[in-house]
Amino acid sequence: MNRRQFLKTLPMLGLGAVGVAGANYWPEQGFIHQCLAGLPDSVTRHPLMQAVWDGIDPAQVWDCHTHLVGSGDSGSGAWFSPDMDSLWHPLLRLQKLFYMNAGCVHEAPGQTDASYIERLHNLLDGMRPGCKVMLLAFDWRHDENGRPDQAHSIFHIPDAYAAEMARRYPAYFEWAASIHPYRTDCVEALQQAVKDGARAIKWLPSAMGIDPASKHCDKFYEALAQTGLPIISHAGRELAVQGGSQDDGNPLKLRRAMDHGVRVIVAHCASDGGDVDLDKGANGPRVKSFELFARLMDESRYEKLAYADISALTQFNRAWALKTVMQRGEWHSRLLNGSDYPLPGVMPLFSASDMADMGLLDDAAVPFLKEVRAHNPLLFDFALKRLLRFENENFPVSVFETRRFFENKNAT
Image (cartoon, rainbow, N blue to C red; front, side, top):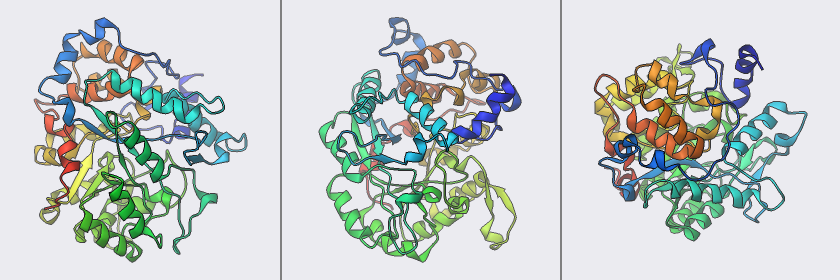
């Protein structure tokens, strides 16, 4: 496959052939993850590994954006659309192949769910004791009447499955529920999630059919504000999970939740795509979604309500926003680290060399990070962000020690 053909495949992964690398981009570590286990001694003892963990309390490290993947072959209730295995839907099929490879999933009968969890155990064992990931559930798409719409859903991860994994493996996992706010039982589902120890609510508005600015959400917002749980909501363009209206990802639509007193974590800092500037009317100009996100972060009334995660910010189509986010020191106390795993294991999407070319990483760190990624993409994501620096600015320890945020349910 030549470079031009490769760039044409990027939309199949949920990416446009644009971004930091543009037409010069080529996957420096190939297309397929080798799913190596463990880390060589030369890596674990490397001086840069010491720098990665310097000042970090591993017990405070909760990766807040880790996808739970499964087919339901363990009885978990997890589901993905048959279209993802259909030759009639080649884009979805290719996406699934990349994601399953990134998560080192064994698709033999009865092995999909278990192998994904086993791989996460292996990756976390390669980090420092105490580190955890927050497993994200994913609700069905629903219509405006609150009815589940399986026909237009791409995948489904039940709250009960995520909760059970966190209960069964407390040394490795926390979890976030996913509850569609249009559901007639949304408050009851929220109460159950709180009872089961959920740390947050996860939304992907376009794929789930959620307009965050709709009055249909108000009942849920009122109940959620009482619990203190935050919403982790994708904002900006979404191509990795197809379907729905991209307009639902407009960051400004999340104001309605915050106006109810709900803390909102804007996933990826809304660093991809463009949206209508609703402050200039429904027919306002389209601007970068990141610009609208920055406006939310800068509004004093949302100082204790608007947050963001930095998951996927080192991905080639989002990395352009890194310099601004790193320079905005006043935002740093409201940034939370997440990996968007398994995406760090999708080999074409990240490049340590590109980070160095952008002036965000010392050239000497590139070989170290490439070796880490070959064995442990979760640690790669963490280490890369810890080593980033731009004009003497870096992400402080607080960005990575997220546990306190999720344990503290007081929004004010």
